[in-house]
Amino acid sequence: MLPEDHVLFRITQLLLLMRVVAGPDTQGLGLERLGYYDFFSANPFLVIGRDEKKARAQLHLAGFDERQLSYAATGHRFVNRRRRLQHDLALLAAYDLATLRAGGWTLTARGLDTAHQFTALYAEQYMTSVRLVVQRLARFGSDAALARQAGQWLREPQLILDLYGATDAEDQEDRSEATHVQGGTADRVNEETPDV
Picture: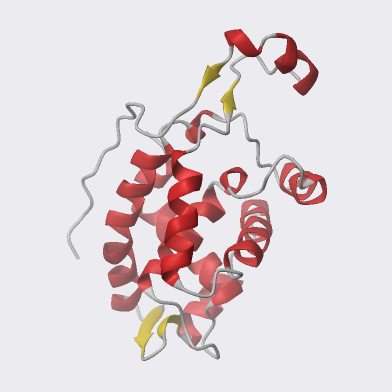
């Protein structure tokens, strides 16, 4: 079972994401854009290219690793996470941690206070990823443009799964033996979530 299969983990990530980009004093984020920010912040190497050395170094320092197995079946995982997003936002709203305004979803004052109480190292690491990813995704002015680009990121077999931790130099030698990770690979995901 992956961490994202747990409701508490997902809503904690949403609180941290919204702390960075959708606080009480902001216009808010629409459901579509929030869904892209949420998924790609948890999977930043789908967005951060190999040529972006500084951003990749920041992600590595924050504990993210492009070789992790969760990058397998990204298309499938995106669909599942997106399906759960409305449920997770409904939970945040039920606990008065988030609200839907005319401009989209934002944290409430209580939600912001709760998000500031997370002191685990992971909270800072995840917010580092949020900042780097949102900086890139915010460049797409419309949700339609963002959706087109996200479709490309989710389709392209740009990540190579290396179970033995080979370096980039070793990858060049063993490219023919590497397994390309593509969206749609079978990943068992527990889709049951508690009712709101």
